[in-house]
Length: 345
Image (cartoon, rainbow, N blue to C red; front, top):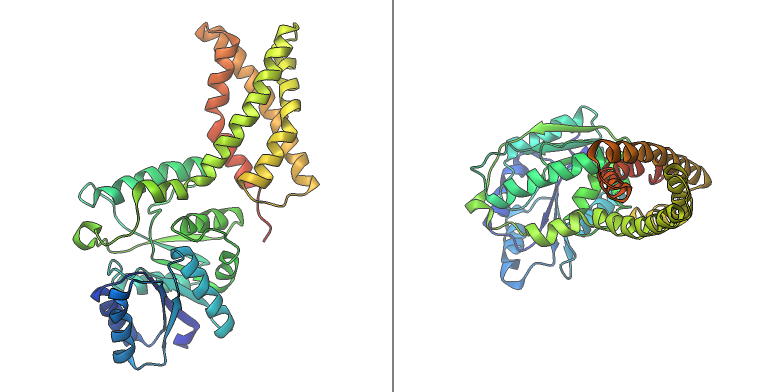
């Protein structure tokens, strides 16, 4: 098989000697290697120069950003370069530059890609002995992903991934440019029903992962920003719904009809917020019809649950409504994201 059909891609920002070590180990297998310098600091540029001086190999290509644009931007720059300059490429394996991905693990992901998989994730084994920010980040991520995307992943932050040509092309449509790009990759694959394969890889953390530029608080906020946008739109919609509901009850309308009136009043506001502000989709009339149908069906279910909670918990209908609507928050997000506000292929 022609090794140029598969490419190893390494985005690097301020790398150290480990980048040289992994490149030297990979080049023995004669695959095409692409390294992109994502605006590294001057004091680290000697690493790239040493590579250029020593490799002397036409199978290694160097790309460069003038300033740091983020890992997502680096990957997209490289994807575009590959698709333009290697029209016969079948797939690419992305790996980090910090030495966390040994050659054996890279080849393991590549083999899964060669078997026809569209998207391959190399997952690490997580225990409490690993660096705290990786252990905490992955466990929080797994919970959020399960709730938001409807699927659990063994390793949500892995940088060792395999993509076939078609999925690489789709990834160029992702707007995110930093660490959240890899999260959007997962959402894109799920939305478009892309086959996702997970294969085990060796778990390595260099000096307790000190070299990692992943910042738990800042980057987690970016990664989950879509949930924050959804939450904000839900607050606006919920206030509209709640006000109409209260007014309807004041005038003696039944709980069921008050809920239906509230849903009707807020449906246009919610649809436009989700379409333009949360999911960035260009939906059609069919999507609006599906959305409206879903809203009313959930309104019926929510009303039944509110009345049941009021009777069994002996609380007010207002308290019951708040509890039930809050409980349905994540379930609604998952359904809307997966089946209604999906991006066109």
